[in-house]
Image (cartoon, rainbow, N blue to C red; front, top):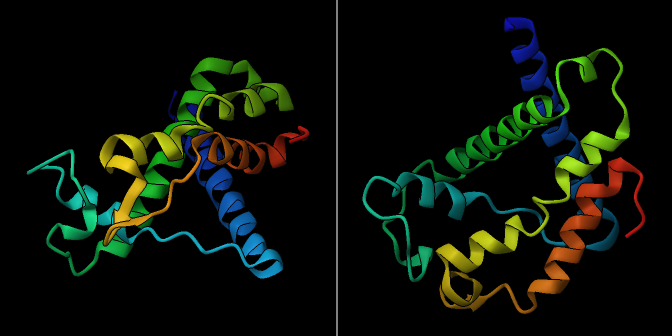
Length: 154
């Protein structure tokens, strides 16, 4: 059991590292903005006080919010890794295939825009700037980037 848990954690961390490398490539090759985990860290820091914010940029800053955002990013990756192993079964670890791993990422594709819509009305994350103009296009881009390693066409 302990071995299975560690392997699931390694899968989550590994997948998150691959996504970060992919984001870095997209930034260098196509000028896509780099992920800003500061607002996420600020949101995590204020979870004890408030879950829903009109604008997370108006919440009191936290000195280490970017580091906390990165840690939460990897925590979510670990949770996804554990969910994958739970859904695919421990036998999948002995002979893994692409199907469960690519399928596990598909339901989470709209997740990025969903948290923006739920925790930041109209997609406003910082100082009134709208970052979420079209949820379907965000779902499409997120699905493409999450499926990149699952060998799917976008």
